[in-house]
Amino acid sequence: MATTSSTGATTFTTPSDREIAATRVFDAPRRLVYEAHTNPKHLPNWMLGPEGWTMPVCEIDLRPGGTWHFVWRKADGSEMAMRGTYKEVVPPEKVVTTESWGGDWPETINTLTLTEKDGKTILTSTILYPSKDARDAALKTGMKQGMNVSFDRLAAYLQGIA
Amino acid sequence: MDSDPLSTTFAALADPTRRAILARLTTGPATVKELSAPFDMSGPAISKHLRVLERAGLISRGRDAQFRPAQLDATPLKQVADWADNYRRFWDASYERLDKYLKTLKAQEKKRGDNK
Picture 1 (tube, rainbow over the protein chains, first blue to last red):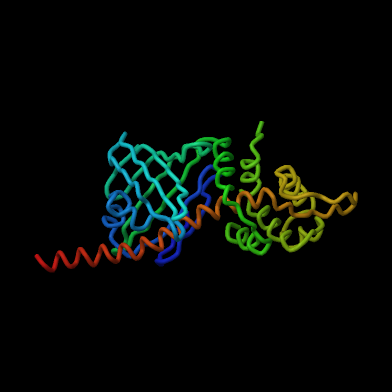
Picture 2 (picture 1 turned 90 degrees about the vertical axis):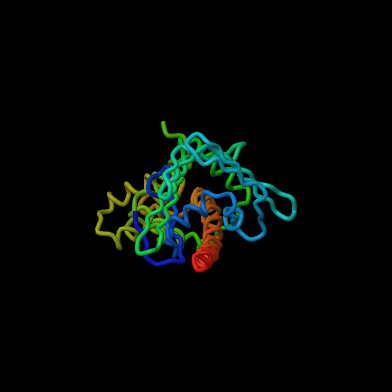
């Protein structure tokens, strides 16, 4: 998969038809990037998605077989929750976990890998859908906040993945 | 066998020629001849790609027996784009924040180190 050497831009790719991956370079040693991803003290400070969300619940039992539970909340009271089980924990380079949003959302296997180079960290986060049906269900759930994609944006999107 | 619509869409999108064809069709309908022009490919080879795209519901073909211009059907693409968009927005925003947060962590570490 293509990696980028500059910081400040996330590259999204589809390594296979069941996966989607994000790659980004951070100007910090991977020890810190790992810490920011695995310590409940840190996650609510950044893993918040678009503006307006807080993360009131962030429980992490960081060991193979250990579980995690995250809840996000918006000012209007709407909530999103997800949970999973750690499968592999290899500090400070790799974390493999299951992830489930509950309801229609399928369980995915997420792999976080961190590679350090010249004091910078290359992060790759891959989501693997267990089956084709599951990915379809994920899509439908993701569509809840669906919006209009203009042909211009669609063209840009296609050129982006072409 | 393969009844899942999103899988069919992804399979159709897995090929760079087919993505290029779709990108071309976002500007308007085109015939096989028009579509094959930018590629070093025969009409039948392009037609084969169009059949895959048609089966995936990504394009529809005109009835004109000779030219059958291909036209983009955006619905499955919009599903893929929306899905990718939500995911992309979440992580883009989070990673922006993580960038700043890591700076704070680095500064804190340095401060602790200096105090030793």
